Amino acid sequence: MNYKFIGNVIGRILCVEAAVLVPAVGVSLFYREFRTALAILISAAVTAVAGLLLLLPKAGKKNYYAREGFVSVGLAWIVISLFGALPFFLDGAIPNFLDCVFETISGFTTTGASILTDVEALPRGLLYWRSFTHWLGGMGVLVFLLALHPMTKGKGQSMYLMRAESPGPEVAKLVPKVQKSAMILYGIYCGLTLLQILLQALGGMPLFDNITTAFGTAGTGGFGIKADSIAGYSPYLQVVVTVFMALFGVNFGVYYLFLARKPLQALKSAELRIYVAILVISTALITVNILPQYSGVGESLRHAAFQVSSIMTTTGFATTNFDLWPEFSKAILLMLMVVGACAGSTGGGIKVSRVLLMLKAMKREHRRTVSPKTVSIIKLDGKVVDNDTLSGIWFYMTAYSVILVGSVLAVSLNNFGLETTISSVVACLNNIGPGFGVAGPMGGYADFSPLSKVVLCLNMLLGRLEIFPLLMLCAPISWRKSFGARGGR
Image 1 (tube, rainbow, N blue to C red):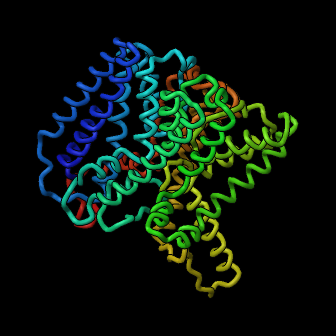
Image 2 (image 1 turned 90 degrees about the horizontal axis):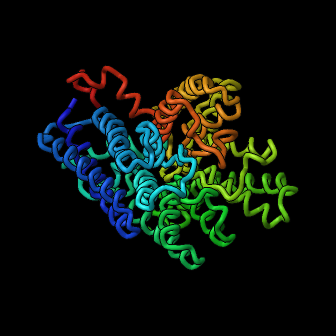
């Protein structure tokens, strides 16, 4: 295990976190929130010092492999969440440190689950930082760092970091160099964010609301700055947010193909077609089902489209209290929570590509049962999917199921009812935020016990990092100095 390299990675990330805290100081000073500005400034200073101390030992030239990548990512997300919670705690806006950590983990993992009972009472500087954690965590903190500076000159080794943090069953570089791939991803990410800000400005959304809403949409996080989330804004602005939530749920590799002037190849993506189909069909079904609750088809369609886009992309914004919808509509939303968005997007869930590959694998096994001598291979977008990828998917789904059951049992100790218990775990494990019942869009997680909050924090991290990096932290073999020539790979 290359401990110096891991420390170096975490040190660099803490320095980046300290730097991105500085704009929140400026926001606080602009709104004359001097106590908040001081709290954020102290937090940035403490974070920077911790980062610089970790950077003192040189990482050296020793190679690193998959286990260092996964361990670095797992530790990094825990550490940035702990330091990112400092502004809330030092300001006193959230007096309980566990609640501060819960809110920060929810931000970085783009979950949007909140313990705040009156979000509008939070200082503007903290509201800005809270929303920015979505934007930074959406594409990935390590990907952001790789876009700024390569972590190593070793051939392909930075890919281990990117693979450990990026969502989906497999991660491919857009171009041969990892740093350039990361820069392209962030270029697309920034471009879409700025486009949303422009369109929202045309709709008359105030600047602060505009920026924080764009951060929450881009990261598919869903932290709102209003008690009613997006409900208070105009239908035009709600439609803009609906469209961009859906756009940020698309694999960014598809956008790269459009930029590379390969639109036909982009449109042939099986995952994209299924993703769009699920959005359209779910919206149509819910529109019809909730029609009696609204004034007409237009209003019903607008709310249905918004919530389907919000839930499937795991954003978590709301324009209405969907907890009051009929059970049929709520059942559809619960299934969308689990499926999630596309691989390679900022959305959560188990990903459309995994669902597609599992269905293909089931079809292959059915053929083998009927005709054992049949030779069948699985392809996705014309490429053969190897058995290692399929094994990884089944391992992921097994771990996901075990974590889901264990978490539900732990959270059930709150005695909030089965609907609240199951939906809160599903909402946090799939990085959505609001569930049903007590954890519904007009509720929150403030009344959950400390044990439940710790469990849900772990769920959020497990969901965002797709389980493996945190499991690596718990595996004793990960911390051995060496376990064979091939073991570290």
